[in-house]
Length: 217
Ligand SMILES: O=C(CO)[C@H](O)[C@H](O)COP(=O)(O)O
Ligand SMILES: [Fe+2]
Image (cartoon, rainbow, N blue to C red; front, side):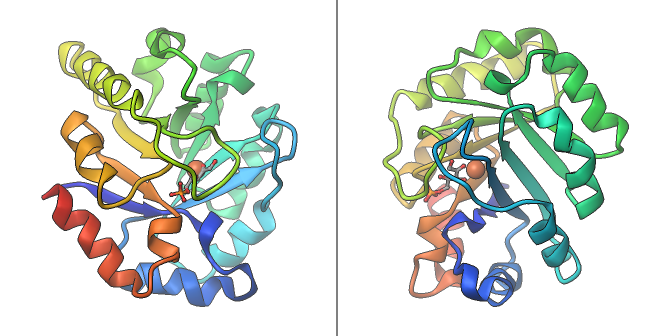
């Protein structure tokens, strides 16, 4: 069964908990938290203080997507704030294997995110150390962008690697997910759909989440 991870990037920051509470009530499995530093990506969002504030209220799995340079510096802070899964970008890690071990040594799940232009081969030798792979289907930095269609083949290839090598990581996709793109990525092998503007921009959040599940059923 596909899991839905609403991205708070498109939530109403002036009324954040009220908006997040709606996705929790609608049965979203994960909350996708986009952390941007203005260096790795051309945008700035939130840090551990906001994660902690939401953690005090929510029981969802907190999936923290770090779009920051030098992520090692902040892993401990985000674990303390309540992260259950941390994704680091392969493009931002000089010692990716070490970084993944650091995340797991904190007792939480480790994931790697790949930009659309980054080949799968950069993670080939760390696949056994991963709980999840996050394939970006837009260039990171902003919500509401168009899905890049070439990413469907990338998802299929990663799914084939997973099957052939008998590995257990989940495949998450992030960017431009809506009613049209969701069935394509799920058919290709995605297990977890991140969706920001499609869910938080909808007139009815619970209908939007249900429609994503039904389109992939
Ligand atoms: O990581 C991200 C952007 O860098 C967001 O998670 C992603 O863009 C979600 O937004 P949308 O569903 O509107 O594309
Ligand atoms: Fe994200």
